[in-house]
Amino acid sequence: MNHDLYGQRLRQFMEEVTLYPVSCEKLAAGRTDQEWLDRVLAGGARIVQLRDKESNDRDLLAKARYFRKKTREVGALFLMNDRLDIALLAEADGMHVGQNDLPPEEIRKLAPNFLIGLSCNTAQQAKQLGHMVASGTCPVAYFNIGPIYSTTTKQGLREFVGPQAVEHFTKLCPLPFTVMGGIKLNQIKELCAVGVKRIAVVTAISQASDIAVETALWLKEIDSSSR
Image 1 (cartoon, one colour):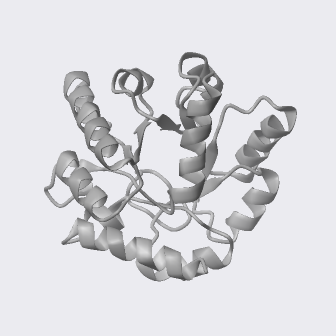
Image 2 (cartoon, rainbow, N blue to C red; image 1 turned 180 degrees about the vertical axis):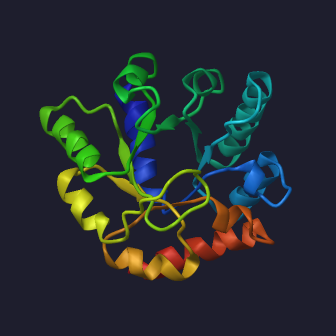
């Protein structure tokens, strides 16, 4: 592992990331992922995640390379959802995976310098991750707690952990964390009050009439609510 490169990425994540926009083209009011990206970066986002379950592989790779080019131009982090092959070919900074995706320890073998994020939807999953941290074998840089509130981004979800899960999950796992799932602007203060520093969001940004303005508004609200 290139510890300097990994450490640089982790420090940037820890120090700069507060709002974590995640793409979803079908929920972007007719705008492409590329258009979405240009606007969230214009609004000041310091990290983006490309989440695309529908494009064919050639189109997805082209899209990922566009994300890489544009994020490099502004010094933002670029993470790929789920697809290790695309992430490697596009030279992403890392990946985010769910519980049923590739295991983070397997990703780490091929991508030692990646920032790897893992979704934790239950306390048991957070506890297992915490055990890996304690044993010194954890391949994950951060974890996501969610879904916090009811969300339409992922179909089939019926259980939502609520903001009270933040304190519980973070006692079980000491890693940096994000929260996600149905979060609205007027809920930021509630989340920051229980220790949230980084909020991942899809529809509240992607469906805004002006994505750049909405991104800047969320960044400002998280900053003021965290003080």
